[in-house]
View 1 (cartoon, one colour):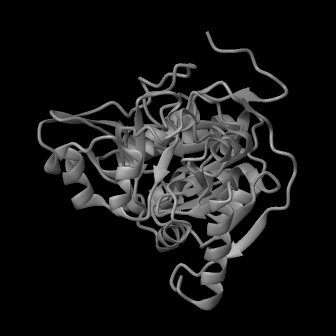
View 2 (cartoon, one colour):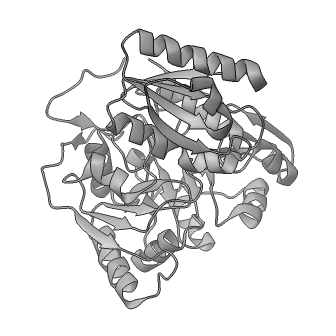
Length: 375
């Protein structure tokens, strides 16, 4: 049974009190993602790295979304992440490393499939669930025996991790359950005054979180779909590769979710999210009908509007986010969270959004939208 909520804070997997952060001044540190070696960028990286080494919290860009980082081997520092995000202690974190060899600092063993996946996809948007080393505090893994670890590909993230010289635990840099941040301004909306610093490296590349893969000697399990697809994982791994990351198996329980990102309701705007499945003209017609029904019900209507769906909502009074080319799933993924945040900020009470069919990153888009729509 989950412990009752406590106004003074929650407890981590080791039973320690996680006090809510007092209001603090959050530094904004600018880094040019195209030139992280410039003098100004290096100064910002050095300052952020110092904060991480001394037990502080730093939000920084990765190629997926912005993460909120702290020294992964410092339980007190990691506790600040949970306090700032108001994240439940049962939800494990992902550890980020700046060099592949550092994986040995946080994992106890490295199966052959892990080596194969690292060789092909690191640095990149792939998280591996592996047996944790004794040095990783229980708070990082929610008391579970495996730790999620990845090496990001973003030049700013890599520069920061290498300068800090510590493994960094970093979930998405937003309050728990809310829409993931793809720009520094999104981070500030949720966490300004709660964390020590935000490294502003511009907009993220992919816009959805990493693929999470549980690695075993005889096969692999995908717990959360992401940029790296099921088909790509199967092409590399030895043995069976199965997928669980559709949200159906997510558990909100104090014993710990099986993987980061498995919460049933996650990535959610404040507005009610109305998803429209289907394909072709039937999906467009259903999109237009849902928009009409929301408008007639007196909702402040927001639309995630791909180019191909414009004719379906002619005459609707709505706040419209131009989502992009319906046939370009990479663009849809990169702009999805930004669109949901923009419509939320504009006062929408209902957001109507078509759901892309297809494989690859479209699977990750569907996963995030369905979790965001749960009530």
